[in-house]
Image (cartoon, rainbow, N blue to C red; front, side):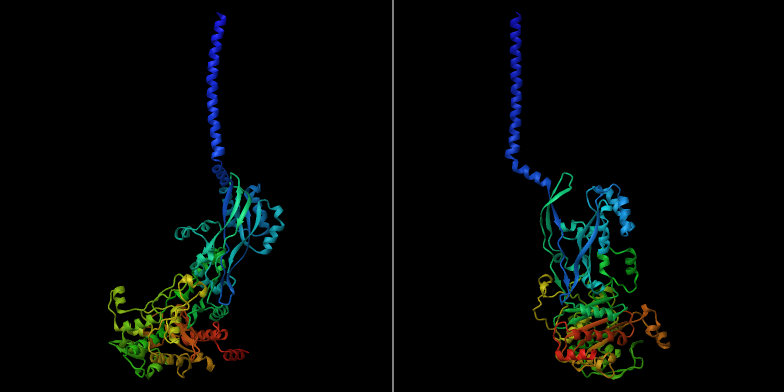
Length: 629
């Protein structure tokens, strides 16, 4: 019995053992199959995933393209940026390390607080910028004491630099850090996410930011599971941005800024045949390097509160009544419409009546009887009241448009203003009022609703001087015409004004400077080969009351600065073979003939000396150098 029972137990155990063993064998087969699938069949995929977890691709910021003047002189370049970073995990006491660093160089309190805040927010191995734009002396001093500064590391990068400071602040502009607004508005670009990456914020830097920016490079690094970089495996540098060549001449730009001094003013010098801008200044200006490295609150408030508006590019965004510089347009409109002949005369008694309203001439006693050329020479307001009424505002507006007034000129800068050339329809649509003859009188002398920019006045003068060809302003030389869409080789369109009408107006401009009664005869260039022709203009900023006229209008220097008239002057030279045109406006400068005209003369004279487009004769150039000597 015992033996039979033992045998039964043995069979039962064997059966269970077989079932358990079979189950284990099946499980091992599944595991083996899965291992085979993962290690053999899917090996490539998982190997790639492991590499991706271990390898990181990081972007490398490209070198920004340079900006140069027409002679190849760099006006926006890149220079070394010495900076200090802190790695928190490499120091036991961040505050103590910063204290030691402060003993060597001054660490601003704002930077100190920012670093302490970022150490609490970022991982311990992530570098935190402490200071940038150190001098070589500061960089060397920290480097010598680096063993005493645990966690402090020195780096050398690149930063944008403007070697001529305020000379090109409004034209070239500046770069700055990428803002949240930039990320929303600009086209997606991984470069914009890079810490410390800078883009164009104003001027040429902003207008041509994309080609100047370049394309990113890549760095392939090995990192652990926490993201800490172990080593760099490979590096591929990106393509630097395109270099950009301006039409401006740095020598002429420097002269213009120095000549205009402390005034609130703007000036533009053009090549009348190509439209190349040889100089464009707006003073006072500012230092763009301050914006690139981070402007202080004190400096920013100083710029914002300055009544002379240093942050405004007056040459393209300033809109001013052109005053008497507009009279050439009125004269051409009247001649071309056939409402006057060149010998048409008007008697000026110092004013003219329109109903019960008296419109005054600038010369209180009047000019007497004058023809067209004499009226331009002496800038007789009464003459232009009369011919403006004869031709009408709409014909004047048509002529003004042909000479570049009242429209944007598509310059390579954002923010260009179009000015205003009013018409009868404009007033009705804008103000809901009918156009009045008095409005025409005011427009006839460049006042009332008429507004222009210094750039437009320079283009107007260039089109007058070149015989009526529609040149447009250019800031970029031929290399970049594929970007701005201009064809530099195309012949400019003809305006269609008759040569005889043009000759009468140009003769009047010649007499303004060279005639015995010219309003700017004191600014004559005493060189027969290089005589200048021009036109002065005074733009009132407030209405002169009847009481003031009776008691005597105060001189400009006797009035508050803000109440003084704007002084304008446009000119070209040489008269017999025109090459260059200039426009100058001095805000609240008072007398155009005493303030703006001498500036314009000196700018033209310096342009002729330098002759940036290389068309001046060697005889004239040597005579000028001899005169200076």
